[in-house]
Length: 82
Image 1 (cartoon, rainbow, N blue to C red):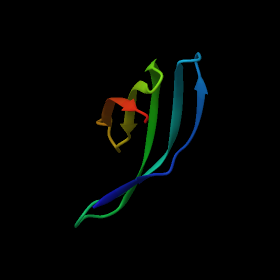
Image 2: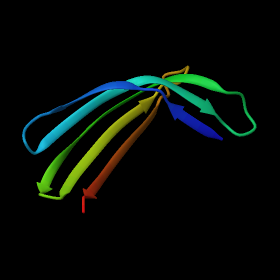
Image 3: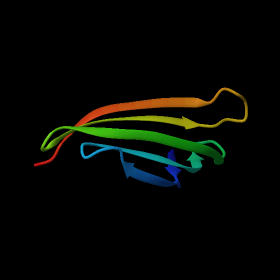
């Protein structure tokens, strides 16, 4: 199966070392051996430079369902640029 986010969003700077983004749009779900569905999804996240080449980032996401049982997700990471 596969899934695809077709999002539009906005990103900006909070300070010289911190940034953020928000995005949302349709989520196309194509599960293996099941019918395809289109749902809504959104993400909000940001990052903070802890050194010249190192950034700590996080993201919070949601995919809507027909009921109130939405799918929630989080992401945390460290990015090093070399």
